[in-house]
Every structure is written in C-alpha cells, then in structure tokens.
Length: 397
Image (cartoon, rainbow, N blue to C red; front, side):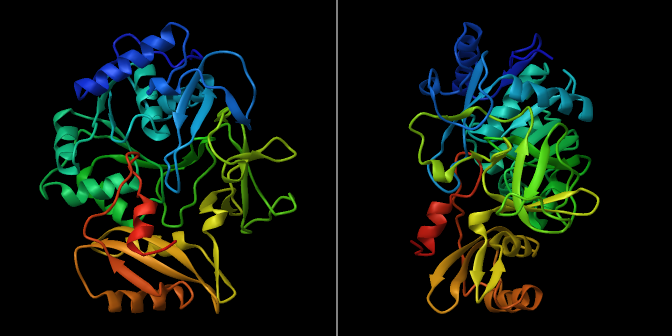
C-alpha cells in the first residue's frame, strides 16, 4: 500500500452535493502537495504538542470528537492510517465492490478515517451528512451500503427512529467504535443488520486503533495488529494479569501531535519514558492477553471509599430494554466523596424500580442518587453524546 491516503481509480463518493464537493476539494489540495483536511481552515498548521514520531512526508489533519470539551486538531502522517487500511482490507475482504456508509461529521476522526479508508481501497462511499436518523436508515438501505462505520450512539439512534420493518440485508460488516458496545447497540445492530458481521474497536484520534475484535459480553478484545499495548501502574511498572492499569501504546499508528494552540497539555496525550503514548485510559488484561478498556482514568470516581467506573453503570443501564442512551456523571459530595447522577433516554417505565434493580446488580455505591429521563437526547456532530448538554440537564457544574 502507498503511504498516501489517495483516491483510487474507480472510487466514488455519494451523498449531499455540498459534502461531495468538500471531499473533492480536500483531496485536490492534498494532490497538489497540501495537507489532507476536510476543513481548509485546518491546513498548514504547525505541531504545538508533539507526542508521536516526527516524520517528513504528507500530513493529514483530523479532529477529536469533543465529547468532554472543544475538539482538538490532531496532525498525523498519511502512513499512520494507510498501514491500518491494508490490515482492514485483508481481514474483512474489502474490495471495490463494497459500499461504505459514513454517518458522522467528516472533520472528526472516526468518520474521516472511514471516508479515507473507503476511497483508498477503491470503494464507493456514501455520506449521510446531516440527515435525521430515520432518513439516514432509509438512505443506507437505498444506497446499498455493505460496510458501515458507526458509534454505538448512532446505532441506537438509528434503531429508535427507523421503521420497525426496516432491514438492511446487504450490509455485511458493521465496525463499531467511539464508545462501549452496550446491550442497546447490540440489539439495534441485530435488528437492522441481521446478516452483518459485527466488529468492535477501541481507539482514539491520537492513537488510532488500540483493540479490535468481535463483540463479547465481557468487553475483552485483542490488541490491533501492530499495536504494542501495555498496562502500567502509576510508577510505570507493568501490571499483572487482571490488574487495572493505565493503557500505554506504541506502534505505527500514533499521530504526530496536536496543532499549535489546541488546548492545555494536561487534557491530551503524553509520552512516558519508554516512548509509549497514553491518554489516561484505564484497562485490564486477562491471562490470555485479551484487553478490556474501561475508559479514561478521570472517569473513575470514589464513592464511599469504593472505586466506581461510571462506564460500567452506563453499560448496565443500556442493557435494559427500552433504554436507548445513558450517561452517568459524578457530583462532588462532602460525605461520600462523590455521588453519581444519571440521564437516560427511555421509552417509559418505573424509574424507582430501575434504580432498585441497578442497586441489586451493582451495589449501593454504583447506584445513581438521581436518575433523569430525557425525551430528546443531545448529540454532537461526531455522533457521540453531547456531555456538556447532559451536564446542563442534570445541573452539574
């Protein structure tokens, strides 16, 4: 594979004219020696904070999702993506006969990656643009999409908004990233794409893929090919099997760094003394080498002297029938350290009973002190939940 994210002969883009023109212009700029960026304002930026290898050669610029704040612009080499294109093509038998579906805002890493991979492998790429979920589901079927990149949030939204009889039998592969593949997302995938193979990956805009594997109830998956992934204690020593530690990685997929002026160092990627990159995710590795990534370390909170992962509470909530989205957030508490509060998107039910069932399953410390049902779920253009708006709905600082 070439080290440039090129537009292969035969590849084409379908979707709204404005998006198609934007993609054409971006690739034309890159073909004339400029940066490959879906927003022209992102071109020609210098690296402010470097955490990956410093290399010559063509650059591409993407953005983080902005789930917890303003998106940051990430500068990387083309080769850091094309290396994984080759792996995905071989692993899943992707050919020019395939049609990719891309749902989120193209400036953000997951959607940009899916677009670039599809064009590089010579496929047809269908862009959803700003379509509402119900229209998006119909258009996926009409476009004959066979390979879909999506977040769990997007899958849940598609399922809730689409016609109950809608099926997409041509879709053969669903690649899910950008959040935990929970019970609600699994049900949505099974209903909408009954013939599809589902693969779940964990990655970040800064590191690209970390893990990739079929969906499992325990969330374990192997490291992505070529990724050297270790789990470390705070002192830098390597964790034992089944011990929670900080995820640190090296390999060919690491970005160069953040664009100059893109926010404080404390909230981004950093390198340790061995050249590994971390964003503070916590994870655990079993005796067979399979990894479960638990989320950013900042999401682990102490409730009555017990370490609680809000992501685990979210996963339990999303496994319950009728719950399409869930966010669990901490509120400082002078007595207990923190208390949890949760927002869910639910078709209706007894919130009191739901809390009692959760308490029985996960214990009192993991049970939100307040559980709020929201009718309209706030989403970011990247296809992830808008946590700022959820925090506002819960009146959290």
